[in-house]
Length: 273
Image 1 (cartoon, rainbow, N blue to C red):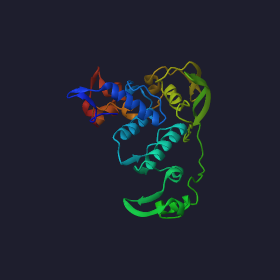
Image 2: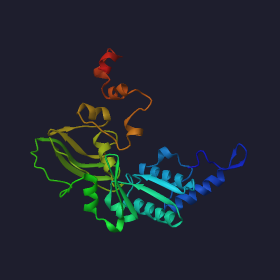
Image 3: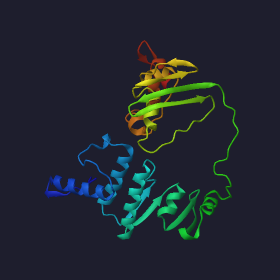
């Protein structure tokens, strides 16, 4: 939170007690309870985002630009963030709040600016505009149905999860068919990520079973999932989905090294192709 602006006791000596006090105070103002000595890598994505907000507040900024700040926050954390924004604006701080979520714009905004294809379309007072009007300005046409229902024939069953339990998950069951998109919804901490990780072999399954095309399949590791042709795109791709120090081709090849090697030696021409 104090990178580049750390207080010092005397030249070259950081004032750690003051940084801990200030970090605790700022996080408390945001309604967040975190150990100021905890490594950031150990925090959930939502907590990391709140630390970033706290870092901006530690700057005593007069203009605060927030780009999709609630993308990984729970409803409770969003409410805490909005309370903090209201306190900041009451103290004279100007906030530019960027969001795709209309309800948030109307919940905290005073004025709204619409951009379309990189161009300024309109700036209006929130009190003078409705959601359909904003959508019309964004899309340059009337959108009568934001989520049109499309008829689609589902194929045969590919994946069946029965009574799955993993950590805090209890008795999760569902079926997924060829050509189908199955959405899993819930607040932060509800177990969505844990469920995905368990199916992908990244977390241990305590009980229940997984069937691929009707055949019970043991998935005890990501390698087992890969053999079953299950691929996993984790929520935090920077930390869990990619090796940032390696090239693009090397990252893509990581999941099928055996197919790209002969006698344990990588065929780099095949890898690049």
